[in-house]
Image (cartoon, rainbow, N blue to C red; front, side):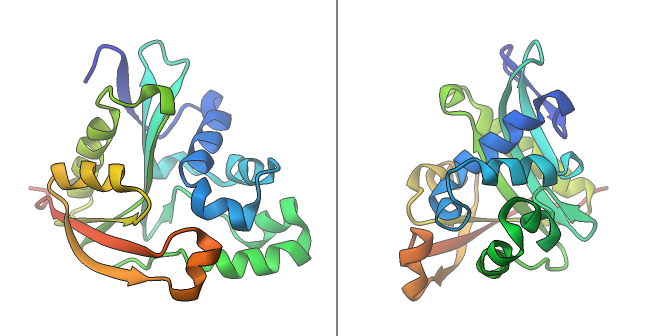
Length: 201
């Protein structure tokens, strides 16, 4: 742990707005074409982010959110919410097509595999080791859940993230091509990467 930040379970409720903005900004390339950039997406995530399914990096004094990593289990996910939540921000007509497209980005749970639900580091906090610290922490979380394997997915337009994952021992398993949908989501493929982390003893 660096003197400048610490890793905590969840995120402080006082920093919920920062968490929503950080999450959306990290994945805006694929989310903005569906959810827009008019503030409604951040408001949606403000409502639905569940701190029970993430770990965060906060500044030493606890006043800033520097990064977070979410995960998905049978009990829930960092980015929960449903059609009613979308409708609250986009109206029922607007939520129907958005909901259908967002389901295309969903990944199903698999036995023994701990599924990451996104990792984000604030732009001005990059290079401080926060991404590595979050991965270390979430790998321990996977072990505590009895999962021997941890999985994440990285899109082809984010080589910096993929390089970090490879340095951390994640290996590519498969590649999913989006085909014509690449024009909508802004990326052509997503690589599934996995790492063996062992079991809880």
